[in-house]
Image (cartoon, rainbow, N blue to C red; front, side, top):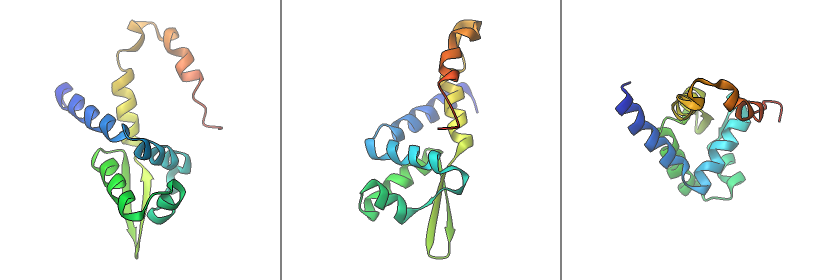
Length: 114
């Protein structure tokens, strides 16, 4: 992906996250881990009607931040960790002007243990 294309993609991804419900859903799916969640459970947890949630999930999927998989009559959603990593890498790529200790606090504040 060229630098221009990645920037266009990053703008789309950030735009998808620039909505309170979509940001909450994305964080919910990141927290759920690789198992993800069923669409109805996501809608119920977010207190959003299923039809509205479908729109939000489709927006996140088009942005490359969420993946879906049909399981019989249910649609299972999970965070797209590769897309999330691509976005974080784009945002942090030129961080710290070659002095990684400047960014140490950012990485130290991220904990996979809750």
